[in-house]
Image 1: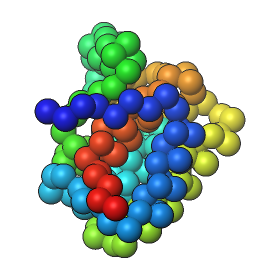
Image 2 (image 1 turned 180 degrees about the vertical axis):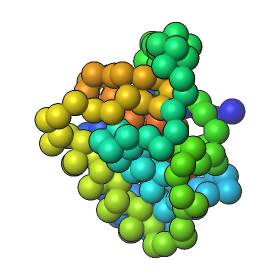
Image 3 (image 1 turned 90 degrees about the horizontal axis):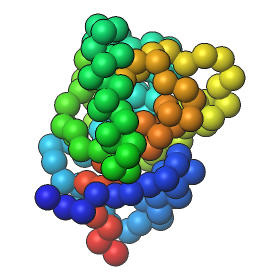
Image 4 (image 1 turned 120 degrees about the horizontal axis):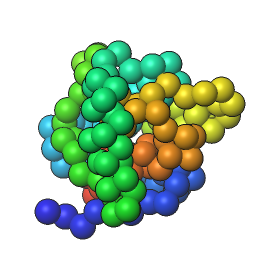
Length: 151
């Protein structure tokens, strides 16, 4: 297994997205292309704002879900099925990579500017904005580590 990509915050995600924009050649491991990975990450952020289509039961979120989040937070990275859709997420359409970058950047900006309570995470349950930012950063980093810069 490759070394995990450790990112501290969503600002570092934006820096990597800028690097992707300027890269001449990249490759992506797994069955999803760059665009699909980035749109999936954007959907996760958008669901925090609008609500997840399907969630684990609250008792799960308050017990196992909280333990899993705290474990990932403590480790500083997460591993998950990077080819798995979020339950209720539409099939990811193959568009240009620029579309995925733009959609993820816009989702991060919407999240950053959101001043209302966030919806419970489908797995971790109710999170503060700071915890959600960490969860998103860990999730996105797990997808970004699939990218190799070839230039």
